[in-house]
Amino acid sequence: MKRDSFGSRFGALVAMAGSAVGLGNLWRFPYLVGENGGAAFIIIYVILCFFICLPIFMSEFIVGRRSQKNAYSAFRDLSGGSAWRWVGLFTIIVPLIVLSYYSVIGGWSIDYLLKSLTFSFTGGESQSAINTMFTDFVTSTGGPLLAHTAFLLVTTLIVIIGIKDGIEKFSKVMMPLLFFIVIGIAIYSMTLPGAKAGLDYLFNPDFSKINGKTIAAALGQAFFSLSLGFGTIMTYASYVDKKENTLFQSVATASSDLVFALVAGTAIMPAVFAFGISPQSGPGLVFETLPYVFGQMPAGGFIAILFFVALLVAAITSSISMLEVAVAYLVEEKKFSRIGAGALLFAICWVVGAVCTLSFGPLSHIKIDGGNIFDFFDNLSSNVLMTLGSLLTVLFVGWRLKKTDVYDEFTNGGTLSTNAKIFGVLWFLIRYICPLAILIIFISGLF
Ligand code: PHE
Picture 1: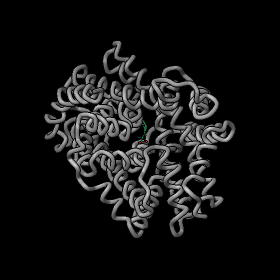
Picture 2: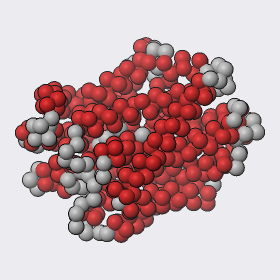
Picture 3: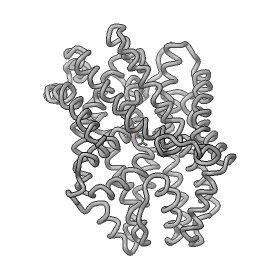
Picture 4: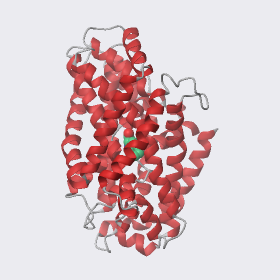
C-alpha cells in the first residue's frame, strides 16, 4: 500500500506550523518574555531559535524525509540497523507522555469555550469569583475527565483519518483561522486605554535579567515551541515530498512560530495591563487572569469565545502531531491498522491523562519533587526528555550519518544552490555548536 503523504506544499507547511504553534506560544511565551527582560529575552530567544533550534529542526527534517519512515525505523535504517533505533523509540514514547497531559489542558479549553459560549465572562465577575470557578472545576472529577476524554477523542479521530485527509485538511482550515483570530484580538487589545503598559512589559529591554537560568529557559521554550526532540517534526517530514526544500520549510515554520508567539503576546499583555492586573504564567494566565479581563472589557464575551476557539485549535493542531508519531510506528512496524493504533494509543494516553487530571483534585496529595503529578510530567518532558531527544538527534545526524548523504538530502541531490552554499555552515552548527550549546545551556540552567 502506498504510504500516505501531504498533498501540497502549503498543507505540509500549515501542518508543521500547527504542530509548533500551541499552548507554548499562547501561555508560556508572553509571560516568559515579560518576566525575563522583555526585548532582551526576545533577542536571546531569536538567536537560539535560528542558530541552535533551526539546525536541530533541519536535522529532524533530514532524518524523516531521507528515510520516509516512522522515527524508530528511520533511526534503525539510516544507521544500518544499529542501537540508534532505541533513540527512535525514545522519541516515540516522549510525545505520548506530553500528549497525555496536554490533553488535560485541551480539555480545560473545551470547558472554557463552553463557558464562554454561555457568556460566563461578561458580567464583570470579581477576580476571586473567577479564581473559584477555575479551582472548583479543576479539582472536581467528572467535568475535567469528560473534557479530557473529548479532547483526546477528537485528536485520535483526526489522526485516524490520515495525513492528507485528516491532519492536513484540518490544519489547512484551522491555522489561517487561528492566525486571523489572534491578530484580530491583538489589534483590539492594543486599542484599549492603558494598553501601553502591556507593550512595555513585553518589549522594554532589560539586559540585567539575562543570566544562565534565563538562557536555559529561552532554550527550553524554543524546543517546546518548535516541537523539537519529540520525533514529531521527523514524522511529519517523512510525509513531505522529495521535491520540497528543507531550508524553506524549516525557516517558514520557525518564523511563523515566532511571529505567532509575538502576536499572542501582543494580544494578551496589553489587555491584561489595561485592567491593571499583573499577569500569571501557564494555566493561571489563560484560565484566571484572562477570563477576568474579558469580563471587564467592552465586547469581552465575544472576545472570550474567539480566544478559547483559538486556544482549542492551537492545542489540537499540536496534539495530533504528537499522536501521529506513535501511530506511524505501530502501523509501519507492528502492522496495526490506523484505527487499531489510534484506539490503543487513545487508551494508554487516556489513562495517563486521567491520572494527570485527577492530580489537581482527588490525587493532589501525591507530590513528586514538590509538585503534583501533572507538574512532574510537564517538567520532566519539557526540561529533560526534550533536551535529550534533541541532543541525540543532532549527534546522530552530525556524527553517525554520512556527510554526503546529509548534503544530498538537504540540497535535493545538489539541485538547490542556496542550500548547497550554506551547507558548510549548517554542518558545522549541527556537528559542533548545537551539541555543545545544548550541553552548556542545560548544565548552566541547573545552577
Ligand atoms: N509546540 C507545541 C506548543 O507550543 C507543543 C508540542 C510539543 C507539540 C511537542 C508537538 C510536540 O504548544
